[in-house]
Image 1: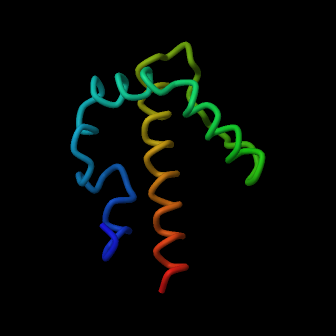
Image 2 (image 1 turned 45 degrees about the horizontal axis):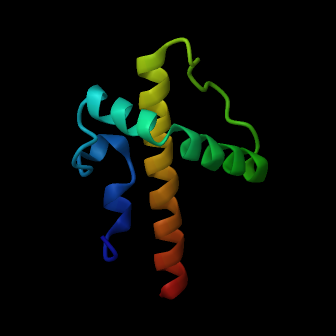
Length: 86
């Protein structure tokens, strides 16, 4: 992953085992819900509020979105770290 971190960034890359099906992303987001919300709050405080976040009333969409937000945020940090090391 260190050599090509961009290959792991996007949801459509298919490169994230365990994040293929909704039941996988939803279970992940539910298990880590409070931590993901903390990361989201930190992100929005630094970068501004995200528009078009799904409503928590649509649970599948909401938790899937949170799972992918957390993944993409984490990979973004990995990319920043790798680039700073080069």
